[in-house]
Amino acid sequence: MSAPLQVFEPFRAGLPPLRRYWKSLWSRRTFIAEYSRSELREQHFDSVFGQLWLVLNPLLLSAVYYLLIVIIQGTSDSARYAHLTATLFLFYLIANSLTGGVKSITAGQRLILNTAFPRIMLPISAVVIAIFKFLPTLVVFMVIRIVIGLPFTWEMLWAIPVLILTILLALGLAITISCINVYFRDIASFLPYLTRTLLYLSPILYEASALKANVRALEVLNPLFPLLDSWSRTVVHGQAPQSSSLLQSLAWALGVLIIGSYFFLSREREFAVRL
Image (cartoon, rainbow, N blue to C red):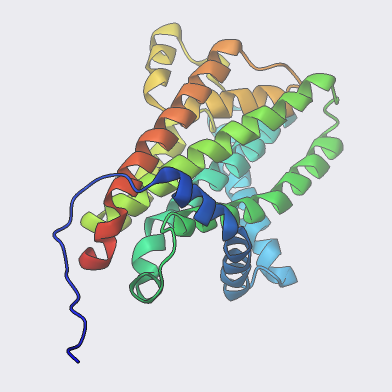
């Protein structure tokens, strides 16, 4: 009896059956959690010093930036330091999602070649890891806020939808850049310059209210600008974010997530050939 023939059809871009795909992805949610935990253990996140470094890195960076601002401007303000710390912590959530997401597909080469599963699980795991890294910094910021003596208000609850929008944007960026890196491997080397540029163009070293009107008109080109501005207003100043900033953040988060997911899913079957 002759052996069965295996036919390899040429690749054609297109979406898989989405209902079956999302059902398969949901059934593997436990794997995503365990895969994220294993990556965190590999990075020594489960140790005291591992978690301490996650906090010290942006904390020391904010202290250096604050010192430079005091030297240049000659004025000191505790709320300014709280703004620097809060926005840096949230910025690192997005930066860590990009850093982990960019190589999530290429680093999972053996897993992709030997196992059938929704490939989008890998950049999702990178974002889950970034969220776990962000949580300790949130606790540290609340301690800083209490020490500085900033008041607590009910408007601070707006931080929850702002954080959800940030996670959606981080997920869309991680999915998009992980797919781009399959075709253009140099994007991983370019990423540190991209994140540093976003750091300086976002309201972190300065507050959005300090910018002139003609400069603020360019904020629509930066997806992080309305998010970080809303985050600072909410968790630092205890104010409700501007509705225009929330709408811009929602548009950026959903736009990047939908477009990035479509690009990823339509090319996913080609990954094994490209790796």
